[in-house]
Image 1: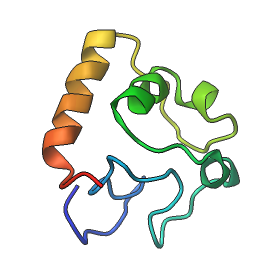
Image 2: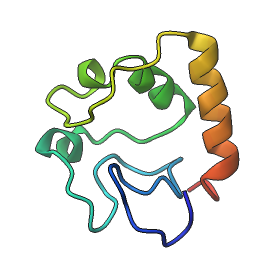
Image 3: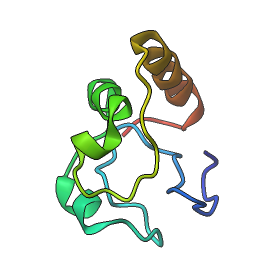
Length: 87
């Protein structure tokens, strides 16, 4: 989550809020993620983090999701504080 840091297993999350899914340079997204056109905000992340593969079918995201609404809210709050300025 650092500005200019390379992507790893997933794309670098710096600048996440306000960014459109599938748009980090030099990251190999699934076609589904590129075509989804999701703008990452609190509400879209809240829904996505519940069941990523249901939210964006055919995504290659290998993560089952977070069932707890409070845990998702806590993670989103952390992301808002640690992913840089919002677009």
